[in-house]
Length: 177
Image (cartoon, rainbow, N blue to C red):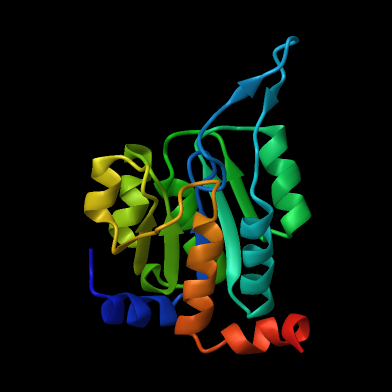
């Protein structure tokens, strides 16, 4: 992991923040109903963090190995600009995002928790993992959040980005005035 000053400098450059889902936007648990329907739990604090980050001008994306209608619904609710689901190859959709947005890998952040996230964690300018993430993800991360996946980690990293880019007070002002 890098120093706080290094991470603030990295975060200041982020124009696109990319999120994994299972273990990051959720706690990694998968719940199945009696008819086989899958359920996931998302954190409302994380959701507002994403909305505030978008308000500041940072684009948001999801790249998830698991395909889920629940994830698509949550992504739509939160206004994610880019969503890719299905397949352990996360590098191909990442490269497509770079081509689509015209951004460099250094201008991207990614938060992931497992070995399937390694190709992105190695390439982005600001790589983040969560405390419950696998050791391989931690080894590649510039920063590991204090809060766990599905337990405020996303809100924490969104606020870190907002502060690093000098936008925290501006996006919070409407709520705190």
